[in-house]
Length: 313
Image (tube, rainbow, N blue to C red):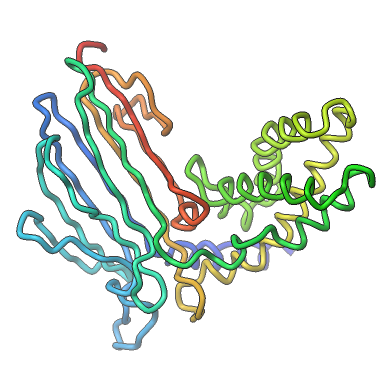
């Protein structure tokens, strides 16, 4: 029994690894200049026999083309790697350099980048990702399955349409961000290690949903009742998500209403001590990073921020 399970896991990992991904690195120096590096990884559009095996790089990303950028391309194994780099001053206006494309080449995600000196020796990095494309169908209203879960979990006297709609919006937003990031996106764990993903999602949503239930219902629900409601809703949402995410993880599967799953990583290296950030700190490299899938932006702008002070160590 073990071999088929291992083989299935390896096959699924291979599918996920074939997804497009991008790493954007911003390195600021004390003098206020910074270097921006973009690295795009996309499945090679053909194999050694010239057979088309996936979308072309230009179908997934828009690449920097101005003379200010140094661009290199290399094909490695079944992957095309495109690197772009330029150096700017903090006062310079950097046009959007992250462009993710949706169906038919329409712009899906763009970014804005700002590096400001707010006081002597204090620098603030801010990067915002904005969704420009059509929102995924599942974000246009609270999923029917989630509505049903709340109806079944809440006491009858509390299960009004207004209450369910309000709670459903909170739950679905947080579940979406738990899956797609930023902050340790759990999508791959949901597919490969659902028990671990379940615990992490319950922990992440538990605090937020418990607060929402307390705010809305006060002492009409006990702590045990609130915990049972959150668990029932989360488990149902996870179960309904597994099949759709397996399809979306496959960049070779044609879909009319969605683009291949794309992983995004943003890294910033600042001089001095990082005093505040909403990202993950790496004390070894001195960097701050954010990891997410592109779909994270569909539910609302994602803003990445980090502050440093050069006089502190």
